[in-house]
Image (cartoon, rainbow, N blue to C red; front, side):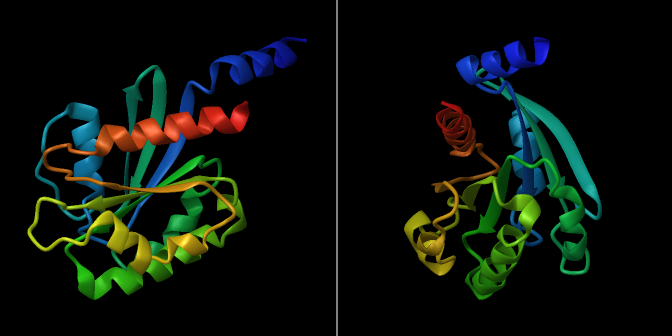
Amino acid sequence: MGANLSKALVRLFGNKEMRLLMLGLDAAGKTTILYKLKLNQSVTTIPTVGFNVETVTYKNVKFNVWDVGGQDKIRPLWRHYYTGTQGLVYVIDSNDRGRIEEARQELYRILGDREMKDCLLLVFANKQDIPGAMSPAEVTGKLQLHEIRDRPWYVHPSCATTGEGLFEGLQWLSQTVKKQKS
């Protein structure tokens, strides 16, 4: 009885908690995004060798955000964080044209894992403040996102250091989860 009531309330009011996994190549800006969301300040970071986890509350939704290092030697460990993930936040360095194909390959490797089959995909086209950065439309094309038909996805321009675009991405995630539940 209690479990059914609980499920009904979640359907009615939406899930108030969401597990996000933030991945991307090294130096894309994942940790800077995490702490800009959490502390609303730009922090000096070093390459993440393990992971950082923080809870960010936005519009009554608690986002449990797991930020995992992106160096090529530790990417095989990403799969250990997949279980229970509701949303993948994939961070792209929009200024790094030389590694966009590598980023695409890693993204499709993640999305191909059965543990990730139900998760939403939010791509932050980060570092938009740098002249010559790829636009969200260009990132969409280079990542071949139009081929993804098995899940909702969204690309949003961002600048981790200023916070521009970050909360709009969380807004999309929370709205999309609520739509799926109704």
